[in-house]
Image (cartoon, rainbow, N blue to C red):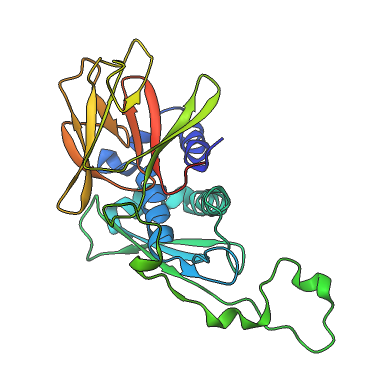
Length: 258
């Protein structure tokens, strides 16, 4: 199960199947996880092995929104930590230590808005004579030679943009379509770039295209709608980590083909 789906299950169980009631309907609690995931992606660093990502996250809510979750803020933070660990594993990231998430309030924020700050906190240095087992999984001693990933070091397609994929499980099989070129069409018809053989999908359902350097999804007048992160859209920008639904078919924009 994907990290975001498991986190949504936690939220649904927490409020008896209606996690939209949190924050008084001003924002979706799952937005906290999605924003955390984007911050994780944006702050990855090049290392000797796999990309290194922050392991501490500070989520700041408005005073009213924090009051809505204050009774179970600790449980929510622990679940966000599990989400961060699972998401990092899904994307092949590594952390210097187990993730930590804290929630706090800021009276200067408007209700329905929040901030996520990330920090990469070093593991304690090994003391003389410490056993190797005590540092199981720790990076080599030259880990300090990491640096922020520059755009030119990220995988890019022929257009010069970072290569993204539309990925998901359909009929028990994993699929991934590269979102390259200027336009990618989605629908049930065989003339589409992404063919989804599902009755809920229109023949020409939606398209994804680059607009001013941004990737956008546009609904093409489909019967059952195009959805981004559980919100029905006509046209909107999307990026890695966003959950898309074409009718009943759910896919995700990813940076990895598998």
